[in-house]
Image 1: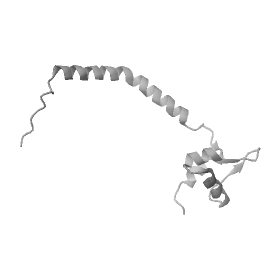
Image 2: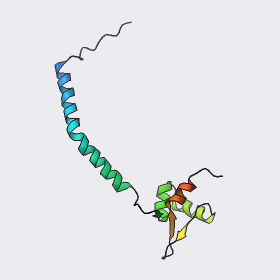
Image 3: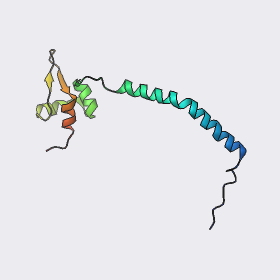
Length: 101
């Protein structure tokens, strides 16, 4: 069984369309990459190593109640800020993601 070449491979309209698409991509790509980087930076957590209970829950993709349960069970280290609210260090959250030992 032989494979027949596509009758459209040498089609001048197809070749022209491919050239147009390539030209558009060359023009648009830098702006799209810039927009993507901007959106990623907007969604990244602040550079502070400290997180609130909600931020910690979002970071670990669990509920705030699960965070409180882990603090109560002493499997997650927490600190109190001056206003009596729990704060978590990013490194402690990362360590808590390791398998239970």
